Figure 1: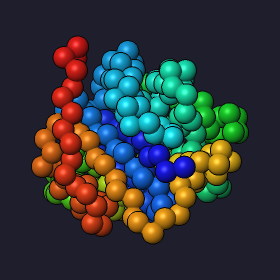
Figure 2: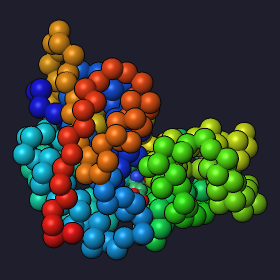
Figure 3: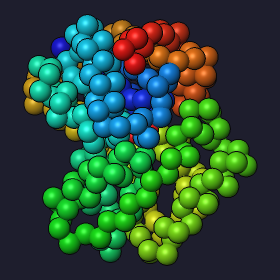
Length: 270
Ligand code: DGL
């Protein structure tokens, strides 16, 4: 089935999932939406995040996608079930895949989670991890400064290093062996976070496991794209400045794709 997979996030963070999708499922067409005009979602109320997610999904459903991927932890935490109840295609988020990926690597059972204020407040990772194993020790930390750095394309500036170091230093005292990057923007900062946390901590990016789950769902549902000779034409939408979005997308995905992002006017209700 050659309909697209719709992927959404508050901004460029969901591109970390798109990158894995392009690697694991190269035949699939992707429609991506980054709500860059309204990012960050982290400090917003749950009601607001649910409303924004509904608006984006309503928009994306016009393209008749075969699946919706909420590639945003903050939106997954509060809006996943709501969106599932509103559309008739499979909808997946990134939190359970992230928790599963962490379980595969932890030896000590001491797992750290960094995410937005919204994600940490929701305790969605604590719930997902403890559902797998109640004995885990989970230490969560909100890092609200990280998303604005990534949205501005400042992945490796002196300010970024200072911010990451200052935010994460106190996590080091817990002697974690695993740290979940519980915000899809954070893999953009992997080299900095890895250096600050040290080599004894494995960083978990939920993108790989999420793409695997997508692949399984499509495969079981008989929904995988038919192999064709032509390369799928992906589409990218954003609600804010297309120039910075295009720059970050091109640098991150590193391949020649149609990068004329279509700008979506956010509904006036917001
Ligand atoms: N990338 C998103 C997440 O995974 C949202 C970040 C934000 O907008 O605050 O939570």
